[in-house]
Image 1 (tube, rainbow, N blue to C red):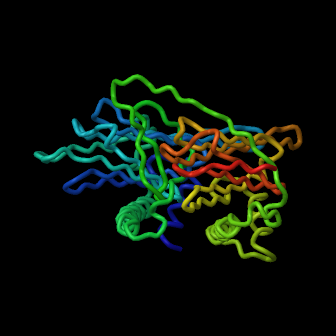
Image 2 (tube, rainbow, N blue to C red):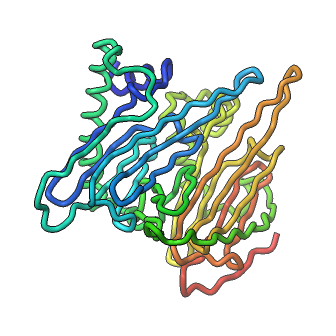
Image 3 (tube, helix red, strand yellow):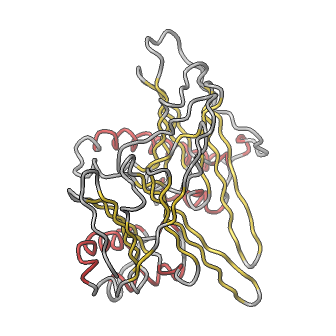
Length: 357
């Protein structure tokens, strides 16, 4: 069993701050914080700048089991006195839940900056951890640091580096940097310390309905990338298709409905960006598509299930950022009869046509 798998199993059995992998490094240009937040992707993850001195990372997630709700949370503070400008800090989330925060240094750099990675409100002292557990976490932090450097070099040559990014479930507010995936350009919250919070405007889009995703010609161009996303999830979860890929994917979702195994594809051509996302498991509940501040398309869904008198609720939230591109009257949302949602965002300068159901 490799180090990463051992680390993940440790976190599954005992989710605590003192077994959360974190690295802090620096070079001549910036400080870099890398922290594992995979277990909080289905909840809420925030990165905040406080008083131009601290970067604060916090997360929380709720789990429902047999009618009872449990909540896990963490909070980490990283101190860079006098260095932190909210407009300069970037936060990037990998698709597997590793968060990288980059804090540029002042120029010229005249002294070594103190970095404080102490946690607050931690009840368990890390010295109580077993030596084997510490070794697993230490190995994983080395793995994180290596992966971040590797991703930085690979991203320069990837063919898809210009794709718009897909954001995970993030609550953004004043002095809070927006967390993006490593598939695209990083975007930061433009709010500065001391400025008044910006008013956000939400526009809920209508969703038109079509036939089955794999039969209706409307979805023809989106099928290949969506199928690739389904296959990727099956590979990630170690699922061997016993019949076709789609049937195996559906069985996986029936057993374990979570954001990490939700099929999503993001593509573009010279006229449009296109988001395709599987929401079949939420058709019995509520699915919404919103445009926020003409920069983001937000897809969210929730559904409730009742079993033996107890009610369980599942939900998801996905953010897709297209800075400066999103006009609510130009974006279209189309749902196939089998629960695959296609969202089309025209690029600037494109003549928009609306598809009729």
